[in-house]
Length: 392
Ligand SMILES: *Cc1c(COP(=O)(O)O)cnc(C)c1O
Image 1: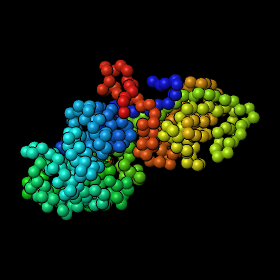
Image 2 (image 1 turned 135 degrees about the horizontal axis):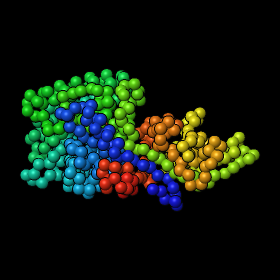
Image 3 (image 1 turned 90 degrees about the vertical axis):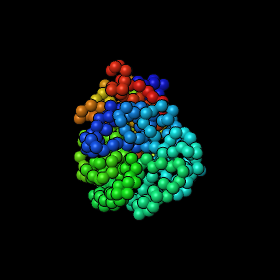
Image 4 (image 1 turned 180 degrees about the horizontal axis):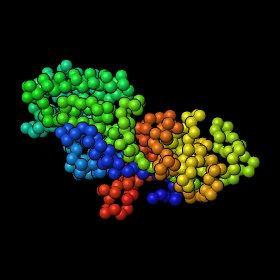
């Protein structure tokens, strides 16, 4: 699983992606459709392997932001449509449509661009983004009805979906989201009355789903929960214990173990040695691989031989561990920065706290910098080779 020339790796557990999806579906009930947010390289997990793992799961769409990533998904020949979160200039719409992607329109200029880009007489499926209060992108909620009327007069664009985004992280945010969901619901009721409701309507993302908010839209679009990440700063808002992080392991191996009978010097700017202990170990993983220097005063640890070893220093390419209490440690031993079994296991939340980051930012920092392996018991070949490396 690891390359002896530079032993370090990340393991992503695609089975957890499916169990997290099952939990989301349990929460939203059988009448709601599910869209997967695959933006930012599937929140750092690898858009292509994640899409392959989810393609048979009956999702309404994969939504992503990067054109390049979307083209790679299309090249996989997936059965699930790829819808673009807004990311293009009006002039770029023709490229999106030409690549078989479904663009999001956010205003008149982007809508007209899709009309120009389509072939005469052919419908161009689009999603419409509504700004329901977040203040980022989209047609202002009050203007949506008129906007849809205007779109109906254009040749080409055919509205397949109408969506908005109401993320929140704390109790105050939840109150805000509840209020904005009600406003979006009122819009949908209005459109229903006029027979203008598009096939897909969606406002709830991970925070709304986890907090148990409901609405009259027919779909949810989830990212955080799918990857087993909390959307909240305040974890008392929901019980997220059924969700497990898809990033399951960060590992390396000891390339040197040293004894320091007299203690060793403390280098200027960082402690690379050890003053009172006897043994240190070095693993070839550091800032270059996405680790960050730990928050001062936190007590970061890694697992060696099932025991916890204090992390003494993180430098550009190296990690230094205090192995004083792991007397039998030897060159070649696995060093787990994330993962491991039972009480000894190190969770993503532990790692994120030591780094002073959110779990999502931690996953993003590590993403693409380590050889990635994918555990996929359900999708793998009859239970054999549970780990495979994947092109990202
Ligand atoms: C990222 C994103 C989502 C998914 O959000 P999560 O909080 O990760 O579930 C949904 N809708 C839009 C518009 C997004 O940009």
